[in-house]
Every structure is written in structure tokens, then in C-alpha cells.
Amino acid sequence: MSLGSLLLKTRQKYEHGLRTAYLRDTVRFRILNTKPIAQTTDRTCEIHVLTCAKDWLNLIWTLKTFYHYSNCRYALCIHDDGTLTENDRATFRHHFPDARIIDRPSADTRILQELQAYPRCLEFRKTNHLAPKVFDFASYLESDRMLLLDSDILFFNEPTALLQRIEDPNYHLNAVNGDISNAYTIAPEVVQEKYGFTMIQRFNSGLGLIHQASLNLKWIEEFLSLPNIIGHFWQIEQTLYALCSSRYGGELLPPTYNVHLEGGINGAPCRHYVGKIRHQMYGEGIRCLVNQGFLREAGG
Image 1 (spheres, one colour):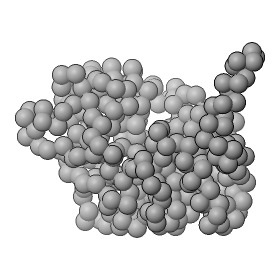
Image 2 (cartoon, one colour):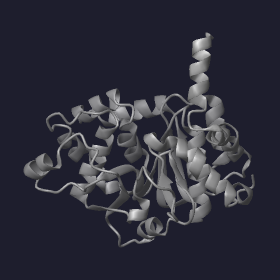
Image 3 (cartoon, one colour):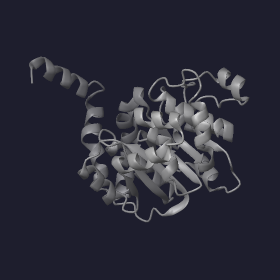
Image 4 (cartoon, one colour):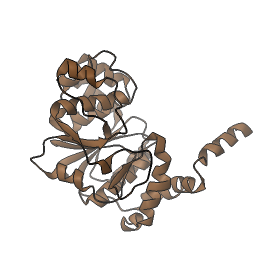
């Protein structure tokens, strides 16, 4: 490695300070010393997550903090984007022994067959690496309700408002965290004009309750016909969830669940550490959890 490359790597490693680097590179791995989460068999709702070799460790923090502070044992389905190693999968099996782990080749065989009658969906599934969040999650879901989770969320106390919606059999809306602003590949006005329904503003597909009936393949095939809808690689997946939820019926979770770039946790039940503030997942989030005794309580 050249001196220039070494300096660049060092600068990147410590760009957010020594403490953040220590929390990310040392403390973060202590989650692997915590006790497994067993008996995740409650299908009142099923958690679905998509992960990769880069994010699997953060996902363990996401899942363990959710299970710890929610005191729920919802069933869990982990979707491999194709980059997980056998060691990564073995780690998931150890920490979540009752989880289903869906490998990419098996998913490809199943989903591509299921989408044969939906050519736009099929092409999207073949070409977008986040498309499994739409199609695979729906196909493998074994509950009427799904908890949608990204691997950059940490929970700090009970997510009461979220759980109330999940547990209420009379609640029939999708409910997600609010984004900073609309991040869609299609203008809401176009949707209003063409379909006659209003898109939910600031819909974020990182955290929320999704009803299985809302992920309608006929709807998605129809939405994919909208001009120029295939835009930014991650916004399209979020756009499809927003479209399905808006037609089906949906709302945002209370403001304490909102994505925000400024400020801290401020007593919120969780925080979504999106890309621009990913470093705060370590410097703020993991630090807070350690200080409030999470690792100790989780058996670490």
C-alpha cells in the first residue's frame, strides 16, 4: 500500500473522531457476546430485513435492540442480498436460532418464477438490488402483518406507538417513519392526476408496519408503467412502498419516529441513522446504549 493510500485510509477511519472509531471498530463487536434471541415465533407480525456483508453487524444491533426494548418475539426472516459469507449466516443462526435465512440463489429461483406474469416487476427485480425489499419480503411473508426494518436503526426504549398499531387487530393502515422530505422517483401530483389518490408525504421505507394485502403485484406492475419512475436506485423501492401504502391506506408514525439529521435522540424510542449520519449510529447510538446498560442487560 502506498503512503498516499495509507494516509487516505487513516483519514477516513478517523474522520469522525477517535471515539467514534473506537465505538465502531471495537465496542460494536461486543454485540456478538450477547445472548441469542430465542423463540422468535410470534406471527402476529413477522420482521423482514435485507442485509449484506457490509451491514450484517449493524443489523444484529438493530434486531437485538428491538427485541430487547419491545419485549416482543415476532418471527424473523433475514434476506441475504447474495454477499453474506457462510460465517455471516452462521452468526445469524447463532444469535437468532428460530429465524428463517433466505439465500439469494433460492430467492432468485422462486421470485423470478412468481413474476413471470408481471414483466415490469420481473425486470425491476432483475436489475435493482433493493427490489427484494418489495417482492421477496411479500413472497416469503408468513403473517398478515410485516415489520419493515432497515439495518441502520437502533432502539433505546419501547416503541409503544409502533407496537400498539401492530398489536391492534382493528388497525388496518400501513404506518412508517417520516422522512426528512419526499424522496420519490415520481411527483405526487402525477399520481394524484393519474390514479386519484394522494401520496403519503415523507414516506420512509426503513421502519414501519406493512400489511401483506397492500403489496399487490397488479398494483406494482401498474405503478412501474409510470413515465420515468425508474429513477434513483434506492428511491424507487421507497416510491413503490409509498404508492402501495397510499392506495391501500397509510399514515406516518408519530414525530418521535421521524428521520432527522440534526439533534440527538431526545427521548425517542429509536433513531434511523440514514447514510448522512451513519457515523452517529456509533458515536451517539451505540454509546447511548452502552451507557444505559444495554449490553450488560443483553448478556454481553
